[in-house]
Image (tube, rainbow, N blue to C red; front, top):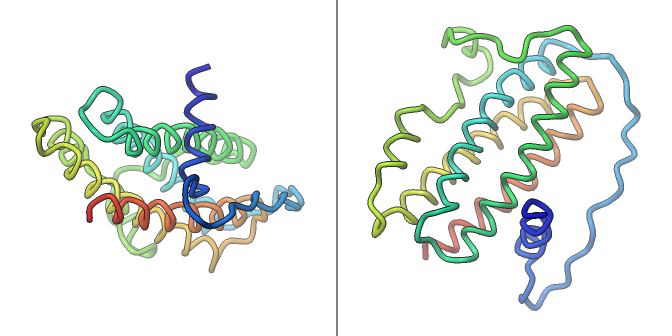
Length: 188
């Protein structure tokens, strides 16, 4: 029930509830599922699964911290979305008989713009941030984190062949770009 409430609240926030613009529902996906994939599809998923898991660690820090209600709502919406996306990505990798991650060697990501993950040290530093500074530090770290998601999605959009992975990349690109704009507004 908590997740459903968070999802509804997140959709309202992301849809611009309370603004003067009218929200339109996202288009229904017409992606044809296929098992065709290439190295870019695999690397995108292998980079994005741990990236999302780090994002989940970040957004969960806002649950019991003194942040504005709209920041809590956004964090909860991100959690619901990324949990669903991780489920899809790990299923596709399993279906393709590929491991969930490419490993920890930084050289593995050299051809994909480097390692786009948020370090455990950065997350630990955020967790140790005092109440007065937490919201600003949280938003800044999450903006950087989501920017990296946009960069990975762009790589998939340009080089992937799997329709499901490319559709996910498009959704990540659009939603994270909107989240970044929203969070930058919170920092003003």
